[in-house]
Amino acid sequence: MKNNITKKTVIALLVAAMLSSCAMVEDVPTIGSDAPISSIESSSIPEESFEEEVPVVIEPVEEEPLEEPEPIPEPVVYISSTEVEPGDYIILRAENLDLKDYTFVDFLDYHREFIAKDGGWYCFIPVKTAADPGSYKLEFSVGDFTYSETVKVLERKAPKQYLVVAPSTLEQTLEDDAVRAAFNEFYQEYRWYETGIRFWEDDFMMPLGDSWYNETTKFGTFRTFSNGDTEWHNAVDMAVGGGTPIYATNSGVILFADYLGLTGYTIVINHGMGVLSWHYHLSSMKVETGDAVEKGDFIGRVGTTGLSTGNHLHFAISVGGIFVDPLDVTENGIDLEFWKVTEE
Ligand SMILES: [Zn+2]
Image 1: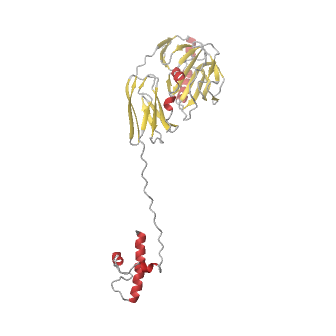
Image 2: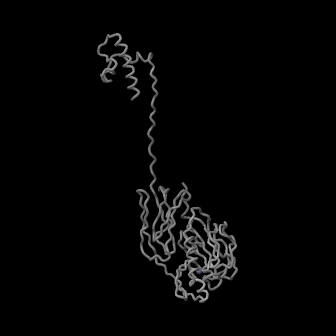
Image 3: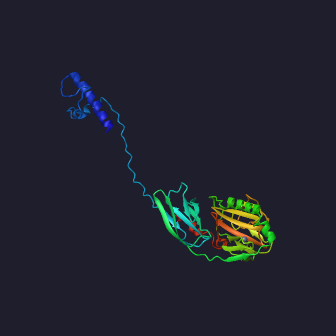
């Protein structure tokens, strides 16, 4: 529109200039006239007659066609299960949600972050062993979107155990403040360790391979020691001959391989995405902190170092800082089917 007005104005001014020099037509405005453009346009002088002499180059303005906005896909959040036992875990999978900023889910005292994987976003939410049965709200928000689901925590019938430990062993372990402090420091430092990378693949193997073992303490046992101390035993104790080889349950990186007064020779493997495996009371270690291991690699031998009453492997798996039933993981994996994102 602006160009058209400019063109007409220029033409009108030229017409006016030419006509005023002839002084023949009174009603044509002269330069500087206040006459509105509409009166110029209504002039009886045809514009075409001047266009050849006064070329006015006008670039056509191409207006970009308005594109139809793509429909925004609806956010979807899948939950692996809405009924869990203490010591179990939940996985959330979110699609079509803008989760680039840190997005956390708070559930039963745990603050868990969404992690990107294979084009989707996942959040591992462990349910602590000591969780009381009942219904709990699981909620999070991203922008205007709010997810809310009720999760039922079922009752877990925890086995109980009374463990007699020799007084000399107790003195060197549970009753030694420095030993306890060293363990607590180790535990707090590594328990929450998490990398976005996933090293584990497929199934988790038994850490003793095909070796026969006696399950002397089940996962989730409430244990009372002979000195009155209590603990939730968040691992499985596998009694087997001293020196029996121990293998990496899955691929990963050795996060910790050292001696601790309470747990003896101790190996923790980081399998990625918050999944760690823990091995206590070894007689010897074949790996060092920082070593990369593949599933089945020989990492050490069974022993009875630290707070232990006989040769056994204390084997645990934690997910995001929470211990889950390790034999459930070796039997069923970590719900890998659920992790697969549907290909389009
Ligand atoms: Zn144990």
